[in-house]
Length: 440
Image (cartoon, rainbow, N blue to C red; front, side, top):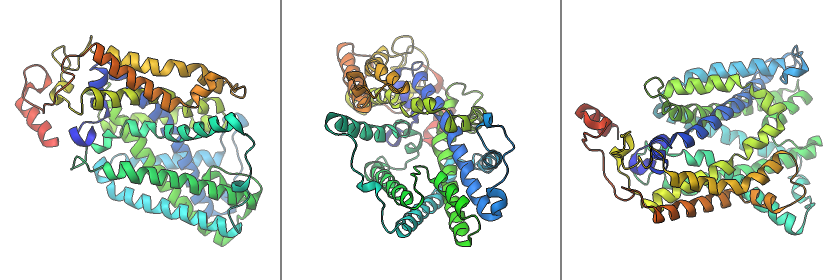
């Protein structure tokens, strides 16, 4: 929708959910963005600590912790967290379209870091380690269901980014501009990165006797073991720079800018993208993310399982745009907040989308609650539903949304019209219309 109609996620939501109903998917994205902003800023702080550890050496690596255990964060990590925030602030002042070169550089840096960590671990361990050759501890249906769960978890982790990709694809100069990256580059790099991460964790486990799934923790552990070794300090310095560039890019692209765009919908007369981004950053700091990362395992389970809410939303969007509207939109009506708009539906909300989302969600809730409470060991039908939550939620919402539009067709559900001068709403001013057409 973004590359074809040049509308972002907040505006695109109005076609499926209604002018007022669109606030619901937008709020979901904003909340998720706030939490991940905090978590990724904390990880960015760990990248800063890697760099400072390498520069300063043992004095900083073994800095005394002056905070109580209840703080759930060490003094050095807290200092580095706020250093990361200070580094991030000026980047948030730059317009998103001017950051393309910086993102290219960050991509090259994190790719080099990943390749370097892979080569070092495989050479130092004389192979990929025993983890890859460890036999499974499960068999039969449990193994099958867990394999499906791993696949859908992998997909579900990216649903938030996929759902809001129109925030970025709307800047495309060509309708099919994002097609190559969406179809090939993104799936390939995501799968390859995950596989290389497994190789690094397996090889490192052979060296240190424990498994580190988080690269920050692995490198911090290595620094404590080889604090004075010049080669180790140099290698981790450059690795830390790569991870720092990665976290800065993620905080800008996936959190501050995207969630900031969404936040503008709530009060557009007061909040623009930049102000929204700063609000997201403030909330990200206020949630004290080190508490979430270091102690709140239940909360992280909920956050990781958020795909049960996003998958039905994705089903609604796909069904509405491709099956109901057949890729056609009345663009002017997306900006008209009164009953004359084709997307006003019933009091500004599309009950078909709400019902479809609820039908794709409720069968997943019992199993989700069991997972959060740690009861999923005793397998049941509800647990198996959660292991298929992305596929189930998407499919059910898709079918129900399409079915309701067939049974209860909405006015203006088909057709395609560009921006045009109208006396029905906010586009009645010629100067506003000309400005919108220039930007599109």
